[in-house]
Image (cartoon, rainbow, N blue to C red; front, side, top):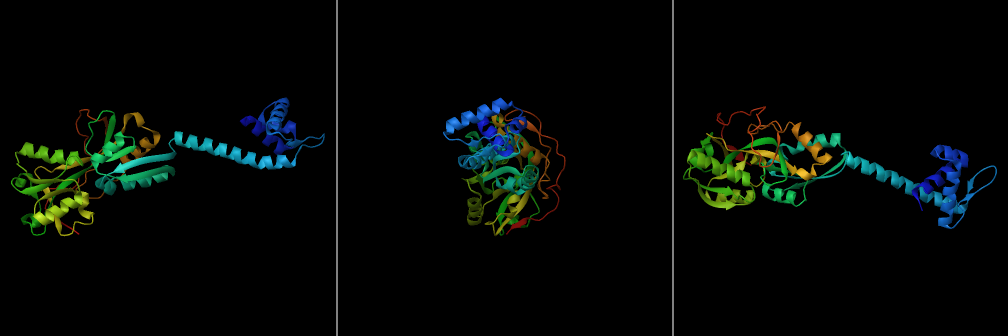
Amino acid sequence: MQFQQLVSFLAIAEEHNFGRAARRLHLAQSSISLHLKRLEREVGVELVARSSHRVSLTPAGEVFLDEVRQVLDLADSAVAAARAVASGRAGTLRVGFNFAAGRLVLPPALVRMHAEHPDLRVDLTEKRSGPQLRALADGELDVALVFGAPTAPGLVSAQVSRVDLVALVTESHPWARRDRVRFRELAGQPCVLFGREQCPAMYDELRAIAGRTGTELAVVAEIDDPLATAATVRARRVVGFASAPRWDQNGLAGLVTVPIVDPVPSLAIHAVWRRDAETLPVRALLRCLAAGDHADLSTVRPLVVAQRAAGARGSEPRRTTRARAMAGARPGRRME
């Protein structure tokens, strides 16, 4: 049974005339008649009662017509769905994000995506940066929003924002009432770091600044979970580190964040995707991320999006807007 046979049968049934059906389909009348004969032979019953005045359907033809309409409607839907996916207007986009990206850059981008691509489904998964990159490499994510540019081959990244790191201390810590602390003051202060496997960019940033400034970090533990970090800071009265957007996270009661300056440790938020999987939905999300007004936080510095291959060398994109300087007077923020 051929698709064109069903189309011809539908035209005959609706036009009640072979000639009109042929004109509707831009076919010769003999072709229409041949399609019907072959269809009836394959079905094994007469579908059309022929007369000199009018073409009508047999009872079997009436039942067959209802089913044919459903089949052709499904075919039309399948074509429309395939074209929508191919054009980037529909389909599923799997996006991973860390807390900072979910707080700052993702919400306005999703609003814009829904407005511009209402039929595109976005599946969201919150993961820390390290697990996101592994999921991306394994094909479980289409886009990852992480700290830092990846170095793995085959990945491309676009820097979409930047967030500062702050010191995390208890309310009773001597720094709790400070407006800021200089990075060199961390020397000798017992501290906990976020494990490199979970967030390599944060670990590397703190270690790199420590090396440049000659600051010996007194690391007492490396921890892979933010809430565990907070619990350790509370229990052991040590210094922890967090990205500024975690001011709003629950579970950090009794802690204070203190800006770090001279220099300010900061992390770039990158959108990362596979070079061999840069689909139209991926490009649509990148456009929405680039157009976003990411956040109104003094510690966030939105940047011009600059695509580059992972691992490629190049200068950091020029900042288009600069947040209020961390060196300015501002008291520590209480975590509530």
